[in-house]
Length: 232
Image (cartoon, rainbow, N blue to C red; front, side, top):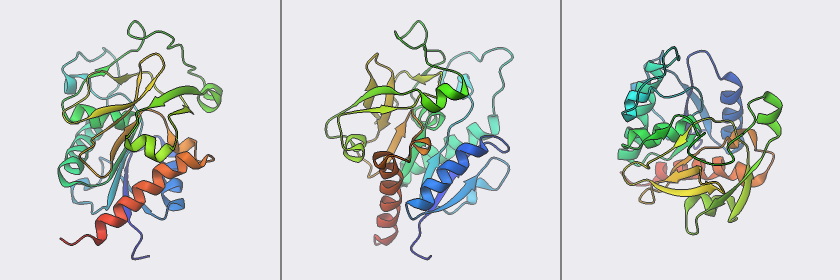
């Protein structure tokens, strides 16, 4: 359909296919057309109306002035691609949703930092690391009044999944924290100057059986559609 916004979705070259499929389905349900973005393609030339920066492995720590973990695997090609797109989207007002690692990319791309491990920084961070835990475990987050994430989710407090072991530390330039866990872990950032530039630490693509999480994708697609009809 000509009025169906094209939503670029970043992912690793070969991994995280389940998460990509879940995001792509959520985009289709919202009326958008998903388009895969990987480091192995001509990603700089992709023509998209909105962007989703997906989850995955850790960002290379020197991007935020920390030491890399010896023996850890980092995807340098993906880092380059997603940093480029996060900055391009920010500077061009491209509607953007960043998920888990993606929210961390969004933050680092604007000069923010990360906690490479949550233990010793926050209390009560013994989150499950098994597949059943990732599927079933939920934790409470509080959203900020007047924020985009509050407006979308429609409530001050909600329950989300937990599939991460790192988190945002210092927010990047022009990014504000708009949701936290009760222990202080940051769960959402956004740029209030933009129509839609939102990062969430949780995974809404695995929560689309609930209307409030489907609305995240619906609002992204709506923002992309609105941007398409604006005069140049």
